[in-house]
Image 1: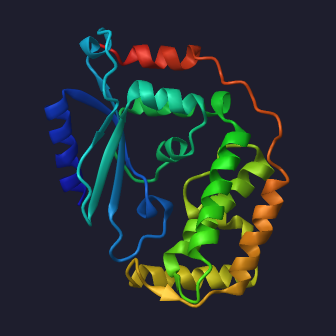
Image 2: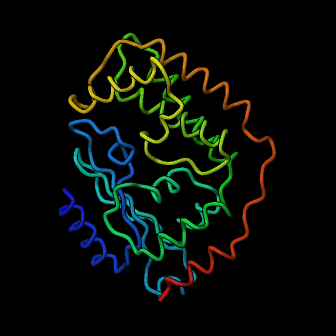
Length: 249
């Protein structure tokens, strides 16, 4: 699959006349809990040549391929990505930490990672992860039969939120690192679910596990009490502007 993904990225580069600065895996394969039939969620950041930025008209800032059962590829233009980075965008911050990188300009990647502390907003990211968790918890974990994968779609973001609440830093993307907040019986339960998930498809269902439900409820309450009240000012653009200009040729 990696060779297919690289081929698709090369095709996009040629068709759209772009340079791809970074491409990674963004979904369950990057999070560390893929199923047998998990698709590949490829996300990338790209830049056009200089003429693209010199006209007066707004241009499209997203490139995407039609989604199929195996492959989901889309990317953000650099200026769009940096504007979202300035707002502490959760998905983008995760992409930039992905353990599965398909392509990267090493200087770009190291430079933008160094800017995490300057633009990281605990409030913005905690709201992002709380919203993700509560949506899954309220809509996907309430039935008599639950899709196994949905437990991880609730656990990972609430553990990321807990990481922010306790450490006041950008949380890691990988579930294996975030799970430090699980202990005792929960560790065994999650280990068992991970083993099952490796062997079943995305639609596999199980009975509700009350211990996990209670843990998620408790963590939501804990994190909600620690979300900063004050809305921080949006960071100045100087550092991001310098990074942007380095890649406009």
